[in-house]
Amino acid sequence: MIKLNKLLTKGKALFLAYDQGLEHGSADFNDKNINPEYILEIAKKEKYNAVILQKGIAEKYKDKISVPLILKLNGKTDLVKGDPISRQLCTVEEAIKLGAVAVGYTIYIGSQHENIMLKEFEDIQRKAHKKLLPVIAWIYPRGKSIKKKSGKELMAYCARTGLEIGADIIKIKYNGNLNDLKWAVKSAGKTKVVIAGGIKKNEKILLKQIKEIIDSKCLGLAIGRNIWQNKEPAKITKKIKKIIWK
Image (cartoon, rainbow, N blue to C red; front, side):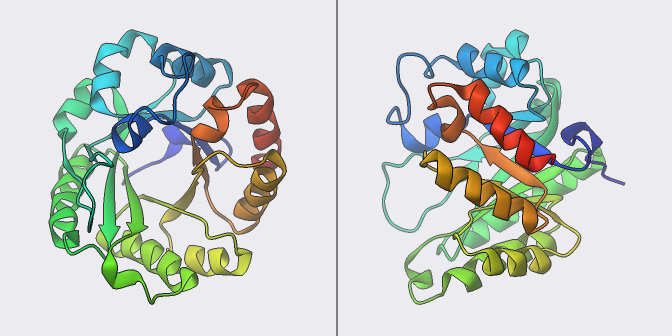
């Protein structure tokens, strides 16, 4: 049986995400937070449940990783337009060698390429579960075919997809409507849901949304830019923790 104990504190989770470089280029970074050691120090000092990395940073900064590692196994750049596809870049075996306690994979449902990503996820999930490694599915609606779909419908569809393909945790984006999120969490059934932190927000809005996320019975957050783009990452982390573990 897959256990999530290594990723949780009192049944909740706060993951520090730092896989944005491949996805967004250098636009998210300044002279300080472009250095992986700065982020890994935040993860250590503020006792995050895990840090999320692509394999290159995990390999080259392995000696600096002092919290549980979630290794992202696929990715893409933001340079190619159209319906997205994110292909596998790292194997389950490589992740285990790098000390990962869980692996992650992004699927863009609604993309004309979703069948390729679903098939890759199937293979990853099977191999990871043989090693009792939890699998996190990043599931985001993308592509021309979703334009007429409502935010509520898409968020719930992402959650339900994660349940039905066998993810242990589903990472989705919050649309800002608490009732919609509650429905998405119900749609995920016994699969746990974490919410993506997304772009840096006004602190008041961020904390309000985090309260809603916890009230909706989500497992927690996978948050990056709202922490390491903040001038005081320790201070904002403490405020977030107070909400999650109230």
